[in-house]
Length: 299
Image (cartoon, rainbow, N blue to C red; front, side):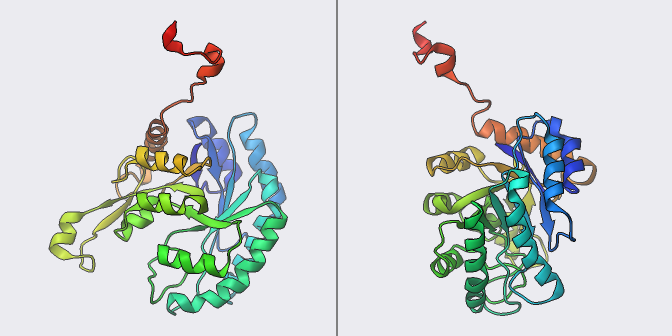
């Protein structure tokens, strides 16, 4: 399924774009749910979908639940509320950042990570919910950062050793790996069983800038892009995901493309929608139902 992520004031936004061909939506919250009634919001989202063949498999809760500022505490509570209320949306997965001990090397976050996420993993398992960590560094690195430790495959090894719970995995997208000049395709082969949700976002690596100016100069060496405008071969990505057993949604994460933005935002997103549908092979054709299980080439 191909859908949209980050749909704003979710029920109203879903109602606005539900007839544009999207097959799924991922509503998300930034740092806090602001005390909203998630059960009521879930009902309103499902009412906005109506009888359309559209799913909400995943909710997003993005912030830093490992620290102790007021908004951090609200993020942690938001995770709990999303887990407890996922069923009102029809969702079975909650996605977001792991959080991070601010300004410290990545490994110094692991004790707090284990403390928080072991508890949340159990809470989620009791509700039949999986947790998926987005692979975005939010401008952090191995030595320092503010938001997330789940941005590097070496970090994934450490994290899942700390919390081997089966319902902890990744919200994966090729964009964030290309931003770090990592080849995304081999990751699917190695980490496919941990990929619980996929964001449809791409990147363009400007190799001519890297060759002349490097990655720390004044010129941007990479742009985040809407699928269909970046470097990724989505046919290969979807094939690898299917070979790894992935059957979930690819939700387009818009609002990042430097070209298809502002008045062109939805033009870019609809292009991405059609691009991803073609990359998966187009519309599903049920040959066995049409031909009674026989070979249609035999007449």
